[in-house]
Every structure is written in structure tokens, then in C-alpha cells.
Amino acid sequence: MVDIDRLSQQMRFIVEIDKLKHIERQSALTDGTRQENDSEHSWHIAAMAILLSEYSNEKGIDLLKVIKMLLIHDLVEIDAGDTFLYDTLGNSTKAKREKDAAARIFGLLPEDQAVEMHSLWEEYEARESPEARFAFAMDAIQPLILSFHNKGWSWKKHGVVKSQIVDKKEPLKIGSRDLWEYAQTLIKRAVDDGFLIDDEAP
Amino acid sequence: MVDIDRLSQQMRFIVEIDKLKHIERQSALTDGTRQENDSEHSWHIAAMAILLSEYSNEKGIDLLKVIKMLLIHDLVEIDAGDTFLYDTLGNSTKAKREKDAAARIFGLLPEDQAVEMHSLWEEYEARESPEARFAFAMDAIQPLILSFHNKGWSWKKHGVVKSQIVDKKEPLKIGSRDLWEYAQTLIKRAVDDGFLIDDEAP
Image (cartoon, rainbow over all chains, first blue to last red; front, side, top):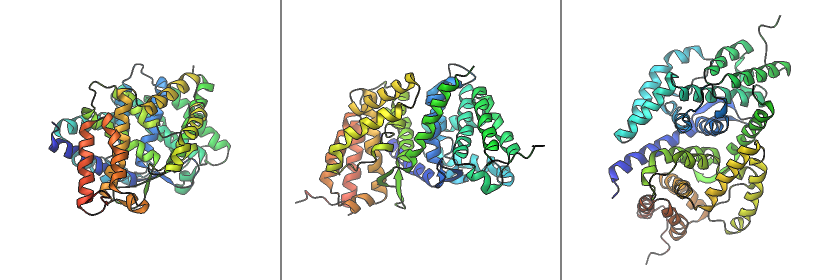
């Protein structure tokens, strides 16, 4: 027999996370028609992880764990909102806002699943496991791929320049040096094609 | 050294599937503010699979395989479009359109990954493995959950009545009898609450 209280808690969570579809990100879709939202982004990077795991620095990672992390990593933004990577003020209060959000949102689940999801989220945030590092690489490179294809839609909007992108994206090499190499070719082509300003050019 | 041709094919696919974010479904979000798209739906059901696998009829299923299927199962709609479950004409040509789409879209990937993804998609469509059956249950129950919470937004729009929903949703019991039980309680409540017409009521 199904434990109806347990299933109700699970369904409550499933309905709650529908709100992720309303959390707008700064990145626009590849065709630049509109910004993407967190649920679309989470789907995209989970699918990317399936295809790109061969580029993880550390071999033999647990892909299921990576994908679980990616599917739930942004749920805290239901309460905390999306903080643009280049927004210094927003980023100073982000950790506290997201911690409270995690407690509330994962707390909707039955205890065992609340613990598992909360702990996956903390593992992702800490970037101390091979899975968390590779997941982070997916999360970091995806908006760069979108921005390259939409010719810097959000960079232009916010006046973001090359040195800022390099600063924020270089950490993805902790998960995949190969994909950081690839990311650098995109950044270079964006400068060459004239839609990213190289603020360090002589 | 990275095989740059291989990585380019993978990136081509990753950019192509961004289009899934434009494929609008008939189901509206739980708050009824707008329809959801295929990428949002795919994210939602993949997250649901993590939480609900205990209700699979068959125990010990490969959750990673389930999630992979769910993340890619709708990609064919990039070419073939979303066919509303209650659209008889559209459904008569759906199989051919989706088969051609699978060949084109998965064909963008390097051969080994094209074969894996195409075969996952076929396995999902055939519903002959425990993983495919459970994945199908996720795909089938999610729009019902949305529709229950938005008080039958798409049912009203298309004049869908109870017997049609029962017909279309009952097959989800091949993946989870427990979740079909739960689905029936939602259908009953929708009728009791007056936003679903019971066409078989005396």
C-alpha cells in the first residue's frame, strides 16, 4: 500500500518546483528571441552532461549524481531569484538567500529525500567532489555557448567585457580542462567577430 | 588531445536542441499563466523520476537510463511539433514525422552517441522495458498534475471530458499502478470541483 502522506509530500514538492519555469535568467536563447528560464537551463545542462562526460578531468564519475545535481541545483532560485554572474551587490547576499531557500524547498519532501536533495545541493555548491566539479563546468559553459550563438545578447545589454568573462568562466577548468580550452576558442571568436569587447587589447 | 571534430558535432547537437525551448505544449503551468514548452516539461519529468522511482511496478530499474530517456524523448518534436494527445488527425501522421526527426537530430551526434540516443528514444517509444514503462508514466502523469492545479486550463480550451482523460492516462499503469491510482484521485477531484465534465455521469 502506498503511504499517502509520503506521496502527498512528494507531489507538493513537484507542484512547488513548477515555479522554476518562471525564474528568468540573464542568458538569451541561441536565436536571441528571449531570455531563458531556470528550468530550460537545467534541462539543457543535464542533457549536455550525458553527452560531454568524456571531457571530465576525473574519469569514472557517477553520471546519475551529476544529472541529479544539475536538475535540482537552481531550485533555490525559486525563493532567492537569479543573480547575474556580473552583479557584485547581488552576489554578496546570494549565499544566505539560497541557504534559506534550500531549507524551505527541500524541506517540503519526506525526510529521507529532503536530506538526499539538500545534501546533493550542498555538494554541488562546495565543488569538492568530481561530480560537483563536472556539473559546475556544464553550468558555466552553457550560457557561454548561448551567448556566443546569440552574438552576445546579454553581454551587450549589461556591458560585459572579455576580462570579466574570462574571470568568471575560467573556474570551469576545475571540472573540465578540455571544455575550458573550447570555451576560450568561443571567447576569442566572439572578440574576432566583433560582438565582445576585448578590454585588455593593446 | 581532444578530437575537435567530435566535440564540434556534440556542440552542434547541443545548439540544435536549444530549439526544444520553443516547442509549445498544450498543458499550461500550474498557475495557468501560460503554456509550458517541451524543455520545461522534460526537466520536470526528469526531476519527478528521481523522486518517484519507488512507485515503479518493477523494482531495481536503472534510474540513469530513465532520466536519459526523459531528457531526450521530446527532441523529435523540434521537427515534428507537439501533437495534442486528443488530436486524432495529428496523431495519425505522428509516427512517421517523429521517425524522420529522430534520424536527423540524433544524426548530428558522433556515430556512437547517435546510436545510443536513437536507441534510447526507440526503447522509450516501444515501452517494452521497465525503464521505458516507468518513464512513460512520468510523461503521462505530469500534464495531469499541471492540469489539476490550473483547474483544467487545456481541458476547457479543447473541450476535453473525463472519459477521454481516463482513456489516455490509464496506460500509465504499465509503469506504475500506484501512480495511476493517484491519477484517478486527481481526476475524481477535478470532476467533484467542477472543472472537468464527467461525460459518463448518469
